[in-house]
Image 1 (spheres, one colour):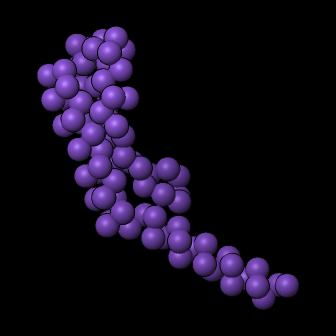
Image 2: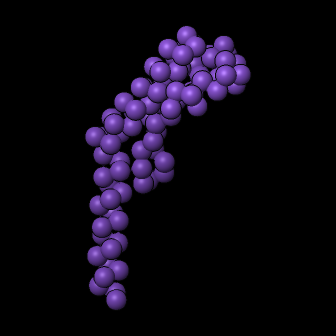
Image 3: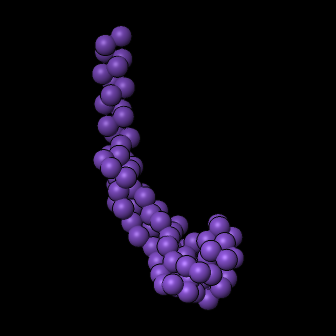
Length: 84
């Protein structure tokens, strides 16, 4: 049992490293930029993207309203939800 757990622990480390690789980060950022451009084309407001790390294990990207007008428009019309 201990050997299989040890191998499983190593595989989880490899998966965690793969989730933080540059290729995955660029793919996440590209998806976020596509969502931001779609939301911008819906209502004409500016939306920004940002890339971050979720602790030690993964990379994430998120889209946010860049200014107050975009935030109000998103709250009223659910622009980011519709752009998915």
